[in-house]
Length: 307
Image 1 (cartoon, rainbow, N blue to C red):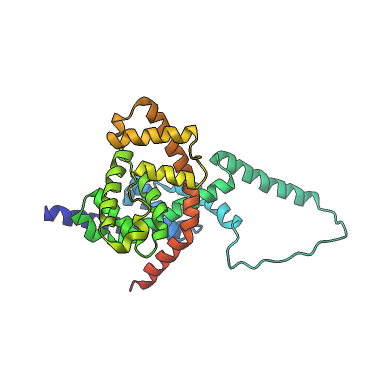
Image 2 (image 1 turned 180 degrees about the vertical axis):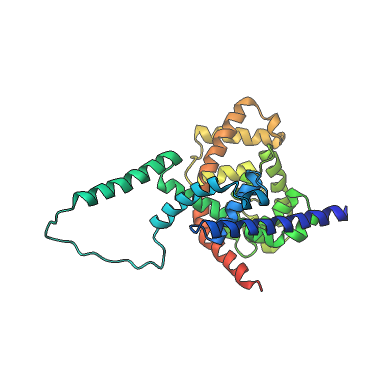
């Protein structure tokens, strides 16, 4: 058993080293990416696309990287950096002619941007929102990784997830809602609700045993996970109390409390659950935006404290 745990730890260390090598290759060959972005792409290629380190270094993923590089170029050129000087241009009272060549050049730029947007199937705002969500979620993983090595050996996934949420909320209880959301939607085992219900129960048990966690525990005391979701939807105006929709959600929550398994929910309540969780999922962008600054500051403090 000990050997297996040690092997797993070394595998993770080796994987991170491979990602670093790939990221350095990406930065060297495609100047539009910084190292942090390159690390994200490296992990995506190796985990999701199943490329080996050697395959990427041999150029087998270059076509994908070239496309990403072109998109990144547009993003880099379109987003004004915080330290960029803003030049104020005074309004002209005298009309001046614009050359036909300049008009054609501008039209070409606009056509290119429209084409890229249509190919991607998303608007510029959508891309920026997706980037914010992805970046904030990844930073949560960075913070959580501070306790990974010691905790993964001792606990299973559900216990580890509950402890990550608690550890990250100790100094910042206001991160609780985004951490719950982020943890819920990172479950990909096909039994998300059942799995997170177990995590929720672990959270309630551990938070109830320490008075210092009262600000956090008060959010979930005497609440099931689904009743917590309903409450946060009402707070944000997504469901009105005493409406027909609200009553349907109460019926779902009551049934799930008696039989806490997705498989045991009636067909009617599965529809209610789907609609309720869709509203919850739609809250994600708001939750990530509200917590982004706090999370970034936490990451900077962690990174700055390392030697």
